[in-house]
Image (cartoon, rainbow, N blue to C red):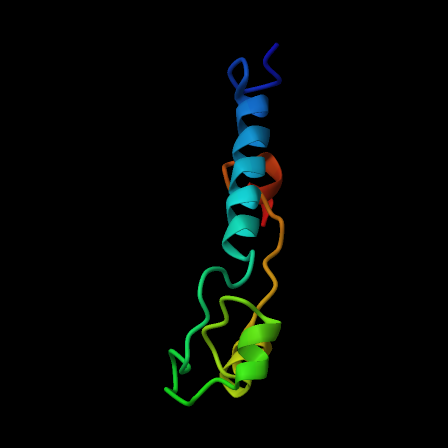
Length: 89
């Protein structure tokens, strides 16, 4: 059953798309995987062995990782696929 101006199934599709987007975002943030780098991929400083053993798959030195963590901006969970609420903002 459609609600208002939407076609049948549009609300379900919107919810499923939002869930799929969020799952993809979380999978991308899963963290380092694979073999650790010997040198930082950003500044090319040597990554200490203890860090490589503690975090398998690490690619950044501590300083570069801290800079990246500070610059991280939390993303709001707003659905931008044409919902009535998103059109009001």
